[in-house]
Image (tube, rainbow, N blue to C red):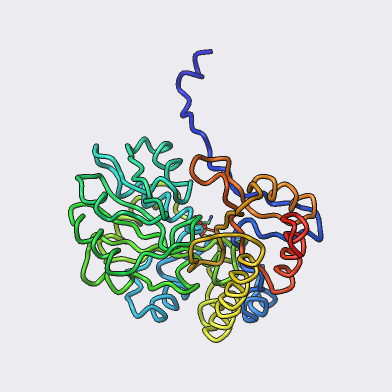
Length: 353
Ligand code: PMP
């Protein structure tokens, strides 16, 4: 058929399963186990539905942009807001990665990067992590068309110290370097202060993890005003109204409540420390995680078997049938109770009591 020759063919990204049945312990997509800040529920209840007949405001002109700017001590013109960081990253790929040279990212990383590169026809090269899953900064010194990596990296949870992030940014002044900080609030040090010094640095964050709002879809990028205006130009060339009014309004409450935000992050860090002890006791090994998940491999039981048996017990974790990582499970940190249920199931599966 003729039309088939003209189709843009891509292999899509495969997100973690979203089981719709009740009672499942869902530790497979790095969602926050706690509800959004209480102000979000109040604002949702008070929302004036009549005004949904209007188009939403431009995100950069909203209270949400102002609130984020105040929180991060930057200008509202230094923030781009999108429909989750996936949307922000997709826009950033389209905007900044226009070179004939390949974009660099790690071989083990967020598996959406190669999908965006493919869909936008951007050449790319995967730079192998070392044997301990660390990014080798020297690999990012060759000429390239841009650089992107998550910090902490996904799915490993490994944090790269800020001086090494800066090493990559400063070695690549002629291209844009994107640091995807989806998990930065769980113990990492953000590269945000570096945006003053480097006009080629874009820092991307999200409301989906530390702010418990994955379902609302809010992500944002921060950088110098010129980078942000380039992003806005491309975004307004694709779709003027990406952000819905509800997200723009409710997001404000999640940023405002800094006490609740810190409490939730601390609870997750505490549960993570406990998970490190329990998983070690159960025979797992894992790199130190600075994210809301642990990337663990069992000393004797294959990851796939554990993954399948947990699922039979209605406990969902993430497993990839991929070279180098197929004996690992990525386990999201849930509530203490959810994690207790996980340890009980793992004791049965891995033969420890
Ligand atoms: N970056 C990384 C590294 C992620 O793991 C995720 C979550 N899948 C995202 C970005 C996208 O998250 P969201 O679109 O929900 O902000």
